[in-house]
Each structure stands twice: as C-alpha cells, then as structure tokens.
Length: 438
Image (cartoon, rainbow, N blue to C red):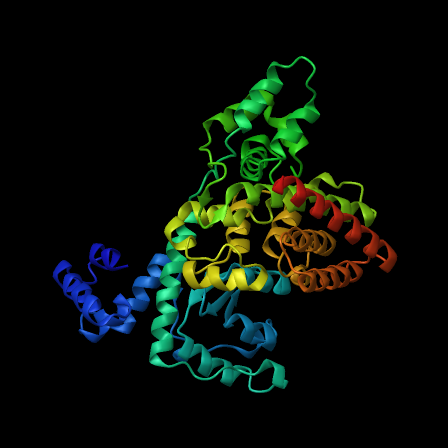
C-alpha cells in the first residue's frame, strides 16, 4: 500500500520511510500511521482506494435519492450488503456500496431488479445515515448496525484496498495451471490406438485447474458458443485433442504432495473430483439427464481457492487450511478482502462458462441464495459438504447429514431418495479416504 501511495504521488518517499519507522516503533497499520503523522487524510485515502478498485465515489449525504429508486431494493438486502440504490438510468442502476467489489451483492441486486448494476463507493458512516433515512422502519431482524467510528472507517478502507488489489490480480488471471502428470497422461492417451474420447474426458476430469481453462477456452468468442459449452466432452470436441494437449503442456504445474497456499494440492484435487462425482449422482437422483454439466460445477466449485493461492500466496498462507464453510470464507475475507466463491465466480464468468455453473460456484456455500439454477446449486452444495467429511467427527457427520437432507428436500428430492443418495455418497467418501490413507 505504501509503495502504491508513493507511486501515485499521494505521499513522498521520505514520508513513507518516516511512517514505516514509526510503525516499527509503535505498531499499527501503515494507513493509520500516515494519517496520525499528518501525511495522509481520510478523503485522499478514499479517492486513492476507489481508483485502485476502479469505481467512482459518491457523496451520499449530499445526494438526492428518489424514493422510487430506493424501492427497487428490499430493506433487508440493502442492510445485509451495505448498499443503497441511488439512481436509475434506463437499464442501469447506480448503487452506493460500502464494498463495491462484493460480487455476491452485485449478483443478487442484479437478479432481484433485472437491471445492470453500476457500483460506486460510499463511506460506512454516510451509508449508516442514509439507511436510517431511506429505510426508517422494518422488522427487528433487519436492524441497522451501530454508527461506524473513525477506526471502523479506516479499517474499511484498508480492506477495500486489499480487496481491490486481489480482485485486480484475479481478473487478470488467464490460467490456473494444471496437475503435474496431466500432460504425460494425455500424451500417452493420444499415442494409444485403443484410447477413446472417454479416456481424454477422464484424464481432464481429474484436473480441476485444467478443466477450468479448457472449458473456458471452448466458451471463447472465436467458437461462437460463449456460455453454452458446459461439459468436458463438448469442450474437447470443439478444441480437438491436440489443442487440449497443447493447453495442458503450456500450463504451469502445481506440485504434488506439497503445501501450496496453505493447503495440500493433492487433497484439493481429490476433494474436487469427489464433489464432481457426488454432484452428478445427486442430479441423477433428481431426475436430470444432463449430469455431465453438473460434474463440471462440482469439479470447479472450489477453483477460487487455487486462484487466491496463485495470485496472493503469502496472504493465503495465513488462512488455516483446516477451516471449512463460513469460517473459511470469513478468514479469506479477513486476509484477502474476497472469498474463494467470489474469486471462482469472477474467473469462470469472465471465461464465459454457462451461467448455471457460475452461479453454483458462487453459492456452493449458500445454495439457498441461488436464483437461476436452484437444483444445481443445492446438489453442488450438498456434494461439497460431503467432501468436507474427511476427518470429521461423528457430530460433524450428523450435522452434515442433516444439512444435506434439508438442502436436497428443499430442491425437490423426496425424503427416501435423499437418505439413499446421501448414505451412498458418504460411504463413497469413506472409501476414498481409506484409499488415500493406504
């Protein structure tokens, strides 16, 4: 942050050196130190962070917001995501946001309103006053949090800066690499006269990072099928086996049995493959015939973890690899400013993957929030929870069973079928763990 402030001309090199020396003596964050020394003020810092995030700024306290615009977004949604719709111009809705890079908030507002959202940054304090003014009444569950303090505002800015930095890196990512042995396996298959297209599908399907790249490439503009290639099979047919091999051979390899970004890459691969198979099986139990696309959603649901580990390895190593669910997301947001479902959605959406798959990736920890493909999101979410059973306690297993049962019943699967498929997949998970331990 300090280097970027110098590069942007906001502070001088001498001022940064003095602030770093003071930070070494007294501790604290560099931004707070610069402000306490008088080298930086809050408004200048806000403009700097907004520029890094690539969004505009709004003086919400002096902006006239029309009531018909406010009515487009429910009170609960506005409070939960810390935002306020301020202006509509045709199909575009301008929304003031404390966290303008909050992918889930943008997605949910766009789905609720049917409008394209243009986010602008506002301070937590300005939003607090505006929410009190424009949403004065509501049930107790929708209460507006306490007024932010100066320290809250500064912490918010630091987190927005961190999020902007990581999001920028994720958005520029063109490849997530591959597993180390994939090119060799593909080469052997291409040389084998007895190999079938299914052989290539099975090889690629063991490599979530490469699957994302190949399916994304097949959804590129040059093929004319953007947003419609939803299986590994179709991607291979469009690209051709030789091009698939070329993509694999050119990608950087993740190293097997090593700690990358705070978690074991082989364990990540095994969990992804299990989640893919489990998602297919659940969708099959629901009566869906096109289950291969569900497998892609399951295989890629945690792809954001690879992206964060790749673009910000030092920060991601701070995230405890044993964390799961909302605890994992909270740690990612604390250390990186965004979570892996958001990072995975950003990548796969930019690479042109079908909207049903990208939504399942974004909401696999919160499938009840899905609006476009509720059944796929529920199946992916349940499969992911079953994948997390590795090393779980008996109580954890019971809680997972109940959660999966509720998810699948909500998605329309009848009780007996739910119990059967969950039991089947739980035994499959146990068998996979036993093979891994051996």
